[in-house]
Length: 354
View 1 (cartoon, helix red, strand yellow):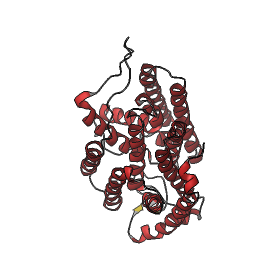
View 2: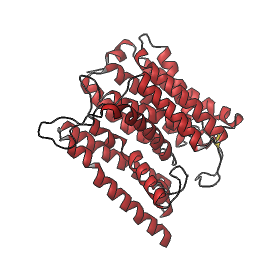
View 3: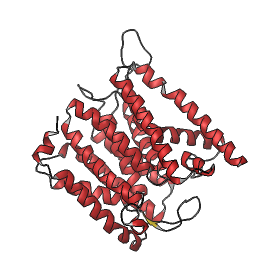
């Protein structure tokens, strides 16, 4: 069944694509003038200054498209407000490189707004202990702080994975496509429509990010502003669609749809803590860095990472559609994490001997 809101306004998706193209094309030169640039220093992989305006272009296109719709998406106004706050924080970080502590504090404030004002809260995490009565594990008074922690965690996971061309945008597209499929089957049409707008805009950005539109002269990065907003959209959707009287997805599916960003963030933090380094200290221990260090080409790295994330999404969706027990979906992610960490360590050893 076709989304009825698309029938009501069939040009809206075309509009967001056109606006995304125009904004991303024009914001690149503006980013250079405003010093919103990612410079090739330290652990950077590129050789030129690249504008960090992808998030601004995507957000401008989506928000302007929403303002022109003949129907309202006002139920998502807190999401839009929180995204605006993250854009401001991200632009400040992209331009002035703010401290990790300040950025984390600002993300926490955004999470509090989402949880306390909007009421987007995880109240239970399913029957993860396979109790005989089938009761789901309720979080009680911990629901609000744990939900806020989840919001901050996913925002940072997307921010941390955004270190290689096409990865963050590609991961977002695969995760949102998975959520879209579930929302479509459940006929939750306003959610479906909102996510379609973001998907279309991010798809346009992916072409700019890979230098496929306008060449390297118009290449743009998401920037912290963009990666954090995309992380917010994912986690807001996962929580919002897993709650209510008729949830679209189970909470235990979320880790699989978060897939690569979640695994990489947890693995990197564990490694940093074991080395007695700050979890927020940037380094070259992300999976894309390790794959490059053993001689894999940039395009192969992108393909491998997106294929890995796709497989995780597919496994999660299959488990969800086949109605696998919550405890299998939940605890099944832990062996995957162990294999992921072991593979990372093997890559580190190989890079040292190369």
